[in-house]
Image 1 (cartoon, rainbow over the protein chains, first blue to last red):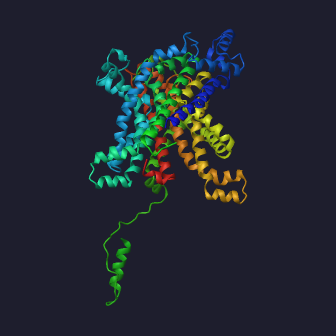
Image 2: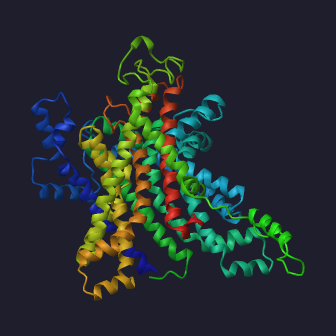
Image 3: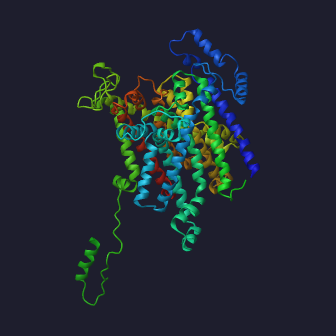
Length: 313
Length: 310
């Protein structure tokens, strides 16, 4: 077990190395001259040259990559071209809102989607099932910022139940913090809920046909016990997998959600960096989020062995 | 019914003492065989609905200049932020441009990006997946690279690419294609690996068929069905990613009206003039819904075993 976990942790190193190599080489393989693009239309040749030097584009690829990755291993993501501050510092300042949003969304989505999928599978073919699955298709189709604006319009502007925009740090109290995150979390969670609910339903349908479900029923076990204890436990592996994979959706969606709800997090940092074409910042954010994604999926992998003792490596 | 009444009619005509088939009640309802387009719509309502919606959007994109639109980039500062009316069906934005015209022309960008990315990502993924599934020594390296690329959330990968290139529709297509094709490659590789174990492939190998011929005749046709389904989902995802990129300012240039751009420009005013954001949002959602329904329908049609589950 421990050996397996160690092996999985080691296996993430090459993946992250390739992520780093890829993000780094984008500067070199991007069509045209990135330095000129970053400098903008009105830049003088001197400015372009300065940016080229700043990005290290005047030096050979390998020596530059070696130096850059050595810094990253030490936790130095470079300096922002616009503000001159270290990228790690910029990220640290913006981390809390994004992390809060993602954690709240994750908890909300899982606690809505899993029961939804279970009920849909239990009542397969009924109007509840059809309704829930129609909702799932809609959830996939309506982009996160559309849901965001719709929710903000109805629940914040018209009904005035929640604040329209903004973010209150957790240090200011739990309820004010949560109040600001409810609408963004629902908006961001829509796709995620759709994804998890569909997989939960599919996985549950398969399990509910098994013999041990009939046994449990014939020995007089209650419906909810069958569904949530016997069936859900055995249907858990695909569900947990998709929760892990779906984190990529959360990360991408967070950038947009923060923009809609004016949350000063990493998404806003990304958008500011795009407008200023501050590539070191974008690079740092991409690396950080990729690392988060890889680690979440590593945790999922480890969870498999806990959920399903039959899985042995 | 007609068969039954003829039996009754003939029963009256037969002489006495001759046994006649007794009249039976209708046990099974008559099976109505539907053929042609109506039959297809009846059997695959999701495909039909999705396709119809998508065709409507395509016609909007193609016919944009003839749908009573004006120049979508024409400014008229005197007529800023008008609410929807007979003159401006969807109102005007903060620069006085006609939102209806912009939304109609915006369909072009979204659909171009969606279809181009779906086709390009499928081709690239197919090529790499086939190589990976067939060339043993390359498999490990290629799949590690694909894993690395898939570890980067696709919107962020596209954002990073767009930060380094000039804003244009073709660059958006390239960026989203690079972010999406590893998924196709992985899918194709998986299908190829399972097909290689099939007896008919063994038989072809035993019969001395060359590898390119095996790929062409036995492997490729079997990858097409799952790939088509995947391509529709990629198309839907590409349309969303394009809108997101344009919305956050990393997508199509401001002079090209795309749904994401229109929403980005309406963002500052959305609390007072929500219609500027609402119309492009509705069209965007409907288009993605159409493509997703088409994908779901195709998946159920091409793999009926999965149909009852997902």
